[in-house]
Image (tube, rainbow over all chains, first blue to last red):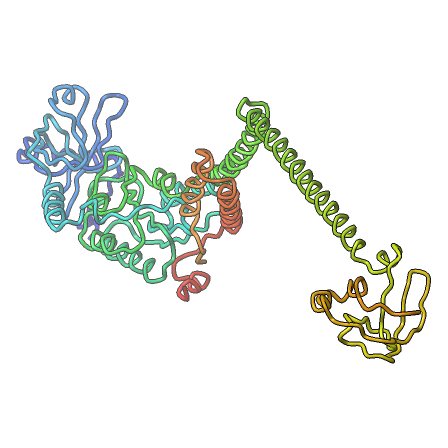
Length: 426
Length: 70
């Protein structure tokens, strides 16, 4: 039975054997393989390392410096090429790989064509319109991040937010960013951020990778979620040169996740500084204004206009003084005139005073009750009368009433009635 | 979490007031009124900045749930 057992190989022997088998196959010795370049690397030695892939499989490739120098184009990830070469085994690690003699560009890659078709479709729907883009808030109250919780991108984002605005709150939705279901997870996280009103701005993205790695960000589910997001979205997918559908739909495209963090939060110190600066400018503006007003007052006080005004004021004061003077004088004159008039009237009155008449030797005749007698008509013989003279009075009796000629005229003036009145005896 | 005047809005108003003050438009009374309005905005901006607190939450965490109420 031992003979039926297969021989025992050492690893190197096995690899050498497989290598020989492969090399001996004429179909593998002269190959043309079409596929998309992925994971392209140019080694410092000048050798090119990359993979060729389609939607289901991948094969490692190498192109040595000698052959690479003959290339007329720069191979890139996502590029659809036709490879001329042979298939063999790299004995050292047992990996199956293609050794490329020549590469030919075979038009745009399959994925790239799908990307272009999607871009055209969404563009025609108006999803990339500037009018639909929301402004990114200058200072969000919280930043939402939709990316892989374990990648380098999330660390870059956290570090930069922390550096710029150390007290900025961040809410993270950790999602798968590649592979089946990734697009749906990203879309759901964006919707969830909106439902919870969890942030004022969202960063949606991932670190660098091949076009296939980034493909979730070209899927319609992600584009739709970004489009309907009420919260402004900053896309941050891969490197500067990677462009995805998400970048076109997003409100702002950042070239890298780090750049997205820079774009979504301001520097905290700069914010404080800006407030302080405005406050300072207000102080300065107001004090400048006050200073200018003070200077203006001084300038005005010494100006010709002000001196003129002052002069006019003085003139007016003088005029006022004059007027007051005149008024006083007028009043004084009027008072003098009144006083003169008063004195004149007093003299006149004094002239009418009966006692003054008595002084001149006249007498007043009254009845017994002291009523002045106006004329002889009121007298009868036997009436008792009183004679008042300047130095006293005497009683008398009427003997005869002699007549009334001229008496009526005399009777008009009672105060002088005694002058030519009845002659009586004392 | 709602603020009466958001930071950028307040800063926008503030810079309008500053330029009005710097151009010395209006009467002194008007300037003093603007200055007082500006100082209110300055204080509001500073309060908004002071109010920030660094937290990292995960969407769906209990801490995040409270924002539903907003």
